[in-house]
Image: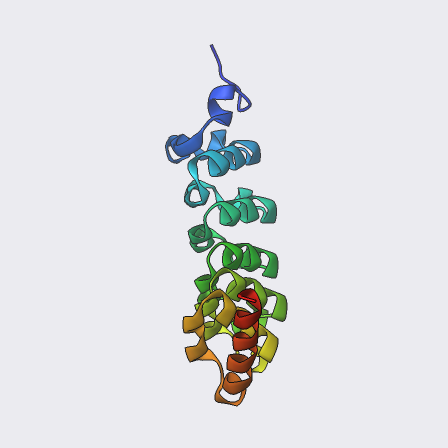
Amino acid sequence: MKLSKEHPMFLDAGIALQYLSDELKTEAICLAAVKKGGGKMLEFVPDSLKTEALCLAAVQHDFEALGFVPDAQKTEAIYLAAVEHYGYALEIVPEALKSEPLCIAAVQQNGCALKYVPDALKTEALCLSAVQQDSRALEFVPDALREKVQEAESVCFAIDFA
């Protein structure tokens, strides 16, 4: 019996993707493997099948899949997916792609990701958001904003208990 690439056995590849020959791999099989076996399955996907959609699905499942995303596919959307799940991933985002929405997502996920936000993007609102998420982020607030952020954070804290 000859098996086709669309056989359920292949579509349920999961972690078996690493044992499948590249000739049998399709985008559907690779996507199923990434969703079932985790984002790190992207390591076993041939570069020719690593579409932005597949890479995005992998990174949304596991930010560490970012290590297997080809440079040409590393878009702001891919990095956004990574920092939404792990704020510290902002550390590996190229400076040119660190936008305000990307930095906001990172500090909302982990306030201490403020450490990797460029100073030009550290606004009072962003710093306050970071400190509200994790008070230890105050360490990464620029001196010029620290007092304002502490005051605003105190007011928010007082309101929460009022």
